[in-house]
Image (cartoon, rainbow, N blue to C red; front, side, top):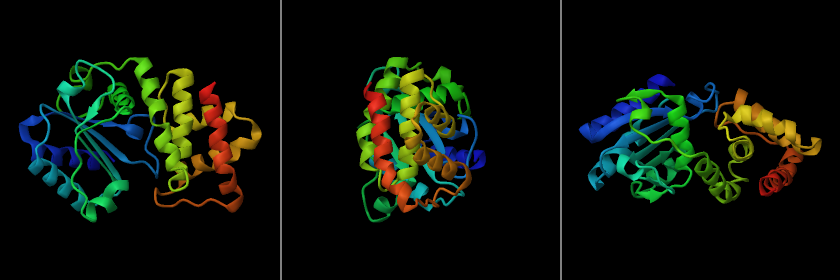
Length: 246
């Protein structure tokens, strides 16, 4: 994973040159270990927003890269997140779930507000793993806990919209949101699942238990749910939402 992350960081540096302040590992790579379904998550911090040529070049480079794992690359402009304010803005976001759209001709990613960037930045800071440049604490401001919670909750509606198509990831991410809101800690998906399983009544545990097993032992493209479990997914999600509301 680290080699692939460094390749992504090198690509960003090749496109943006001295505009790159630093590149940092985040996600599962710094939250307790890489699993078969884990992405390669890289954050790049720049001095200015990217122009159209740079966006095109970076996207083309990502589309042509075929590593062992799916990639998620987030680019932020330092002045947009330091000094810290909420919501932060993302200058460029690429994830493998977007590959088909870009290959079909969708334009390169544009700068947009991105509330859940607060969670990503908090993980990058705690992970303290620089791929390029100085340590993240020299580049990023600390994110207040209240904004981490706020950002976690802001992503819930979008998660629910993907529940049927990306079930494993949504179920695990909901468990992580719940864990973060309840404890203030951002945990790995499997650790968050363990915490949530201990809080759920027995009838709502099988869905989360299965999602965790898929995450721990299956490639990211392998996801199978029995008809019985599939029928229990939405009630499980509603049970987690009830606890978030309370």
